[in-house]
Amino acid sequence: MTNVQQLGTLGSMGWTVQRLDPDRSRRRLELLAELAGARAVRERKRPQRARTERLRQLIATRRRPVD
Image (cartoon, rainbow, N blue to C red):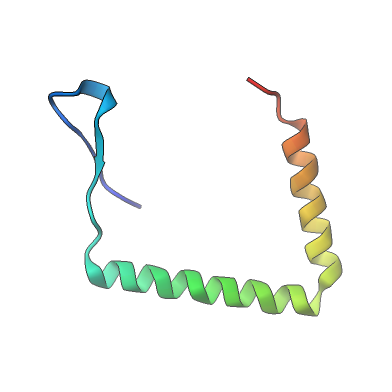
C-alpha cells in the first residue's frame, strides 16, 4: 500500500515511507470507515458469528509457536 525506500547512507537500517497523495488517503479512510460500519452492523445482527470469530482468533494465536 505504501511505497518504502531505502536510504543510501544508513543501509538497511533507514527506511522512509512516502506520503500518499491526499485523494488516495481520503478514499482509503472512507473505505476503512465503510468496512468498519459494515462489520458493526453484521456483528449486531449475528452476535454468535462475532463470538465464534473471536474464539477462532484466540485459538490461532495460541497455536502459534513463540520465537
